[in-house]
Amino acid sequence: MKTTLDINSILVYSEENNKFFHTEFKNKLNVIYGKNTAGKSTLIQLILYAFGINDNKVKLVEILSEQIFVRLDCTIKNEKLEEKYVFLRQDETLLIRDSNDKVLRFNGISSDNSAEHIKLKKYFNNLFDFNLLLESNSGISDAPIETIFLPYYVSQEVGWVYLRKSFSNLNFYKNFKEDFLDYYLGIENVVDKDEKRKIEKEVNRLQQQIKFYTEVEKDNRDLKLANVIDQTLEGKANLLISDISKKKDNLLNLENTYVGDSNKLTFYNQRLSVVSKVKRNHKNQEPGKDNCPTCTQILPSNLEDVYSFFQEENDTANLQRDLKDKVKKLQSRLNSLNKKIESHRADIKSSYLTFNEYSENGLTLEKYIDSKANIQLFENLTKQIGQLTIDLEIEKAKLKEYKTDEEILFERSKKSKIFKDKYFTFNSNLGLPSLEDERFYQLYEISSFPFQGVQLHLAVLSYHFAFNYLLTKTTDVHRLPFILDSVFKEDIEGGNKIKILNFINDNFPIDTQTIVSIADDKNVDSRIEQYKVEIFKDNAHMICIGNGTKEKALLKENDDTQKELIDDSFEILETI
Image (cartoon, rainbow, N blue to C red; front, side, top):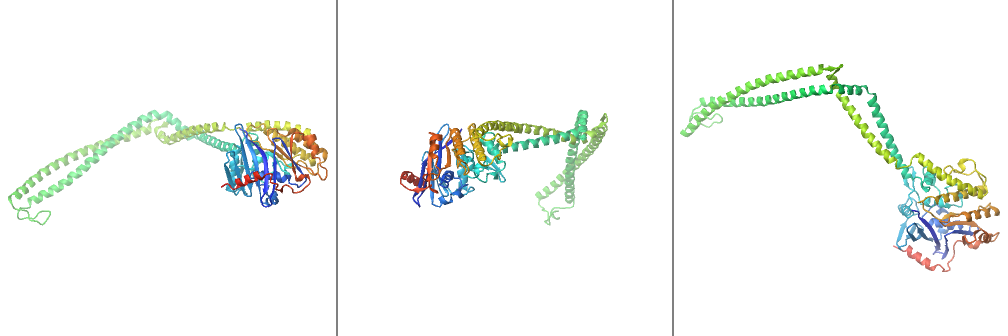
């Protein structure tokens, strides 16, 4: 959805000196004129300053020393809304009042790296639906505010010599020209490139892994042999292994039973030993005379205790006989278990020998067992390749969401063709020689022009108008006033001035404002009235600085004509 900004008016006011400047801008061609050094470029730079741009602040030192504030009344439009905004900057503070009279304050924006300036950048990104990302050594980040205005601004100094240099320090970013052009022409954004690079890197990694595992699987002889052995002997091996496994289970059961019975035998033997000792003590003791076998106490002599004593002797004798019988039976059973265990061990050993000696076509079961590790490796490789293949297809599907390099080049070529046709037309209108070398007319190749003096100035003018025309063909890119500062160079003579103004008047964009500044000195050879009548006619809104005769004359004494606007501005500044 395309967003358009119109500047309705600008107010510059110095409370300290009680001076001001105010003018309106119209939705057509706005021509700022006056004597050289009158303040035309200062006015244009103050417009950018009011949007929070600090790049040209050093050129505003003199007027900023008068403790001014700058107020822009603007209209921002898109397909659904048309809203009024006020941008008001004083020193390091920018206040923005929206159509609902809500005021946002950004304090401390004089440094582009300050937290407040970064917040302001995000605000403008949302306001203009602007999401250009640029890459530097520190990573990918939101593009600076200047890039929002760059396609629509040609500065007085370097702007008429070098492309995309009207703001400084933008070449600090990697691949700035390509990323800038791709974004504004709707081809690709850096975030797309970054995500695409990550996916391409992952695709390459997966392909390399698949290739490695496939070559291991294909070239490893042990894996091939293991696979053949497995296919040849797997059935017989499984039968023999199953048989051995059952025999070992039976052996284990016998061994467990043997251990259990051995423990019982030990227990019975220990009890038998104790019972035998007790029986001997009974025979050698007499109640009323001898001591207890476990203590020094004399055994009791009453009738009841004597009866109990002899009863225990009888019980002990019975228990001894019972234990001897159990020991005998358990020993016999253990002997039988031992024979069975030896027999099972011999049988299992025989089965192992049979297993190891069995072969088919020279492939033994022993080799089959040895090959099982390779078989497991083979299966793991197969699984790895399968999973990697699935992952690769997923990443390739993601990659399809992004344009291929060929598609990007094709899109660039289409845009360059539109630009070239318009650029050549404009060059012809301005009387420039034809260009044969592609690096001077292919949009992504142009970095300089093979001209000097006035011709260079005309070539840059033609370029910016052709590029602005190209932007009208990009659906979603925002549109800002087309600002051309100082369209006359000092060495441009009258004939070329007429040519430049006629070109601007015939080709300025109709969907946005155009603001140009031209030098015209009424004290020497003023032609502004001629330009107005013969060239601009009804197309231009004329804005005079210093009455066309004064230098450094942007601010004038306050005549209270803008008292209401100044008071309203102070109300905004005083908003908490």
